[in-house]
Length: 499
Image (cartoon, rainbow, N blue to C red; front, side, top):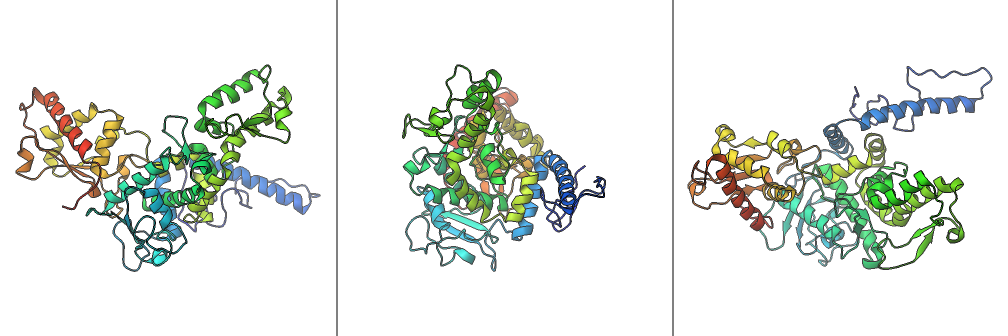
């Protein structure tokens, strides 16, 4: 068992008490340190540190093996302990909040503007109307953690609330992933993203964007929201301060990891003509043929069986760390502007890179069984109604992209939160399950009536289907429900209105 203590209580270095992960000075009570009479004080101190390091390593191993739901809850509680309680919904008088009017066409520019220390002059994105606190009258609304809520509205639209905030987060992430900006690259068809070493070639202000994205990722964690920017585990490991490993390359470029790292480890460098250098441009577009030496004089230094391990570490270090050092530092600076150093130290002991990636971006895949298990119903009889049976049968026929469309239509999210559907939040940032209800009468019985969503509250209202009206049993009703869901999601996932 692993006990997670409240902040200020010390037990094995967790919770921010007298001893932190990786730096404690006291050995555990059940670990003996044998000292000879002639040992110097320096040697005593060294042995104590070694004993404490062994103890901390064992604790970290237990903590990193905990369920992701436990880690998410710990993360939320620690952030709110360090930064203060948060109202994730509407801004609260007396607490620094954010109230932004944004442009759909330039969400990333809006974000960068509101993370800037320059004074607002009305240019760029948004109106600069921070809802109190640091952002008001200054250059940006995100200069302090927005404890009083984040309220987003789009210029020319009436909708406001949690779903609009989630859509804005999705638009920011989509703009950051836009290939025309070249901020990120992906080796797995866009599933995960890693900073592009050549981001500055296309976007001169790229470091401002990385810093703003790091700040927004931390704010999303603080508010229990997801920012659908699925970063590689290797990049998130650097944010946490974990040491580099050869396998980090697998999450960035699995083909290179297999064909060079794994192959050379198994067969050696013989006959490959390897030298101590790496390409300066993995894309081959901006600097084709240009090489970066991994060591001084690397272009003329051949890799030998004796130094193959050092070569592979240098190669991976260049791809994982060296080639994106500035981008990583900028993102980490933005993240660290919200998450204090003492909490980042505890996060290092609790989380791996893959954990942080999921906590930021949400679950990578939608599990329909989990969605159904944590669904609620507006009225108890609905749970077994013909309409609901048709809905879940229709969902079983959908692929991941169609399921994602329904999720976005009903909640404003493009991915489930970390830990699954049990962690959905509502308008005020509290736990609100995905809820199925019926359209109001008489609309629910009208021919061709389409589903409607109250996305701020995770509610999807369905038309009532009559058994036998659309074919044999649930199968026929499911086909009709699937048709109406497709129409609704294809036409209604952009923009919100007030009801």
